[in-house]
Amino acid sequence: MNKLKRFKKLAALITTALLTTSLFVGCGGSNVGENGTINFFNVGDYIDEALIRKFEKETGIKVNYSTYDTNEIMYQKVKTNPGTYDLVVPSDYMVEKMIEEDLLEKIDFNNIPNYQYIGDDYKNLSYDPSNEYSVPYMWGTIGIIYDSTRITEPVTSWDILWDSKYKDEVYMFNSLRDSLAIALIKAGYSINSTNPSEIEAAKEELLNQRKLTNPVYVVDEVKDNMISGEKMLATVWSGDAIYIMNENPDMKYVVPEEGSNKWVDALCIPKDAPNKAGAEAFINFLCDPENAKENVDYIGYSTPNTAAYDLLDEETKNNPAAYPSEETLSKCVLFTNLAPETLKLYEAAFTEVLSQ
Image (cartoon, rainbow, N blue to C red):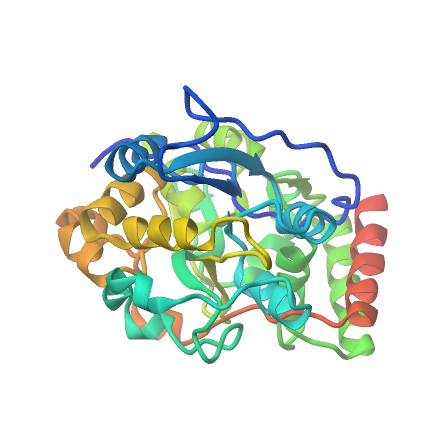
């Protein structure tokens, strides 16, 4: 199995209102290809860049490539710079938000014949129910990774993150949707709750956790820290778990029995994209099974492309961290977009937790 590359998941940090200027970075040579240019705005380290060069060579279309860290940064850049980007990679709930705000173009699927390889399980989902605005790119779950040499009891529930015997041994997501989702599940509520009293209850769960296990809130640092065994337990995205386990086989990953979040990242074309046809050509290229398989080998997350999945080695296909059982997935739920007034409640709750 190829060594998995370091990947920055789309972390919904609440401080993302502070934006930094992104400059397009070309892949060598002129900024204009013989058949045009596309401006591709992607999460950092979320594509095998050899595929960009391959696409440029095959099509004569130049790819100006720039990156962002979170959905919220991407959203603000697209909203405040209309007509700038040709292709972005939002998560499910952000796709829904951008559709509602008329920030995405409808895709001409006549230009994407390789869409046939996207599995039916990834179509007609709640964030794009009519399959008009997005093409699934990668997917995964959130769960717990733990040191099996130091934790001998079964790890089956989110409750272990509140067990005082693991005080100072827990990492949590520095991500409001993810950490509050875990707390909502623990409290017996939906991860998409809009009920103020339920959101308050989730906040109290996290405040109580502060007293019981004193977790440290991190994002990308969790990978190197868990590889080196700095703590016993951490909440992680499944792709990060695969990377950690590849580097440290003592680490094990589980999706708790109470349920979790299943997320999907998608390829989307912003409204008034300068080169919509070029973006569609690139989406079609990325959906080619051989290219999709190469991309999965690099990134390490799970593919919605059934033909690419068939090309994976048996070890990867049988890895429950990458491809959980139907029973596990039946307990996992997609995030939905929250109304602004509800999002403010989430932000206020998480800000209070982080301030403790």
